[in-house]
Amino acid sequence: MFWGELVPKVVLGLRISRTPHRLGFEGNEAASARHPEAARAGRSLRERKPEKRMEVGMQPQLPYAPALKDMAEAAPTFRSGEDVGLSEEVAQALLETKPLKRLAGIGFLGAIDYALRRGSGRDPHRRRHNRREHSIGVARLAEVYALHAGMGGRERRTLVCAALLHDVGHGPLSHTLEPVFKERFGMDHHRMTRAVIEGTTRFGPEIRDVLERCGVGCEEVLALIDGEDIGDHSFLFSAPINIDTLEGISRCRAFLGLGRGPAFGAAVRRWATSGRPPRNDFDDFWLLKDSVYGLAINAPLGRRLDAVAQSYMATCPERFGPDDFLKTGRGFRKAHPDLFRYLEIVPVCGDDLQSRLPRSWLDVDVTVSDRKFFVDDRVDLVDNDDIFARYRQTRDCRSVKLGQLVEGQGYGQ
Image 1: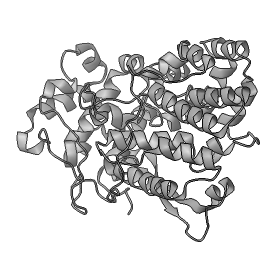
Image 2: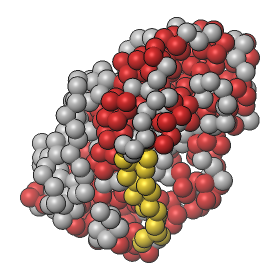
Image 3: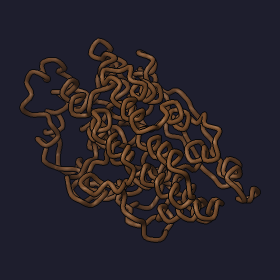
């Protein structure tokens, strides 16, 4: 079974439409002519019997996904339309630049975000999250820490700018297509973030100019982002638990529709005020991260979506170029509509997915990664250096054929 029968049902709030035309297979004759397999997949999907599709309101089962802990009520993640809540003038200026505005069009989770969007409601699990929202959320945590730790003005501004800019180089579908972009064009979001901040992309020196005008060192910001800073607060970006991961995992939890979780804003205040990492909060976070990876990132659906997208790009290299990396999600979808048609059928095809894909894709090698996160109780959490030793993970990467992954042979336990 595609959704598995190995664990109790987990309420994710997923909603799959049973109205076929909403999957985007109609009204695009030109695209169908360019890629007839996608059109056939759409026609086949419309002809399927209702009982073989997920009905509205069904709660899918995800194999190998641990249950999430029941935690204290979480503060909501930042969403577009809210007051940004950043006091630094340089932060306001950066948010008006084209590269930061572009992030509003970059989905936070990648392929799974586009395939499982459930509407435009205000609830976190009913809308698509984007990289701009995440960046603002990280910057807010940075400012909370800086103010409660008593940082000086320049150090505080540098920290907030690094938080706001740390994902400015993300491409469409975020991490989903990055392995193929890196292999073909030498591009990933780390290198592109540096290029955007330094002003060597088509956006020009807009961000560098803002930083210089506000007295913030460009290289200091980049050192924090790259984990190369050796200052007193470098751990805020380089430690296994940092302000980026705290916000990002909380946002994943919200997307999954799980209404309860740790309130990490309060944890960051305690962290800054005491000068010591809050052990209970961080232990809870590390276990939450393990659960989120099991429920979404390493779950069969997430892997299938990533693998299908990567196989499409790998087998149609002539359709992609370096300029695609700096497109918005909407621009990328307009340039590659067939890719998104395939992504939209993945969640609803189940065991029939293999028959909906071009045969040439099934022999494409894709890399899957199993990541497990665990707390090493032998290490006490006395100071920030202990974060590196107490919060550990294992990672197993292997190559499988797309056909094997679709058949359920590449998941692991």
